[in-house]
Amino acid sequence: MNALTQQTEFLSWKVAPARMNATQAAWFLGFELHEITILVGTGLLKPLGHPARNSTKYFATETLEQLRRDEKWLARATDAIANYWKERNARQKTGSVPSRNGNGTLRRVGELDRVSTA
Image 1 (cartoon, rainbow, N blue to C red):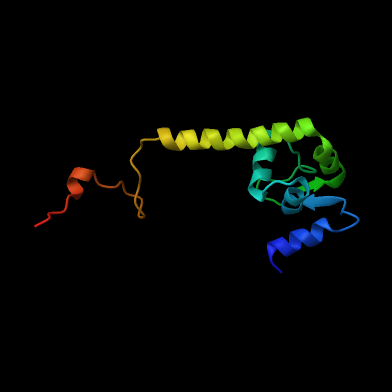
Image 2 (cartoon, helix red, strand yellow):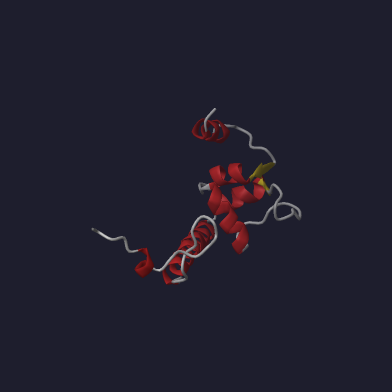
């Protein structure tokens, strides 16, 4: 079963489960899965309990339902995601640090990489 089929089936359920994992929460709210991580990181979305950083996070369906209807929250969440990508892209553009090749060593300077055309 592919992801689109799973998403369609999940969204067609008449009764939603009491808690949802990150994938289900993303489908329910209309966000992408990777954006849920951003929302949790900015504090706009809180998982149930006190999960470890590397554990599965669950979200209360009742809370997600309230957030889904809250236009101000949706605007803040959308802005937070846009800000995240704006800052990340700005960091990549200003980072003029020499890149590393596959084995972790710095790449050679262009002048040393010249190949003779003869």
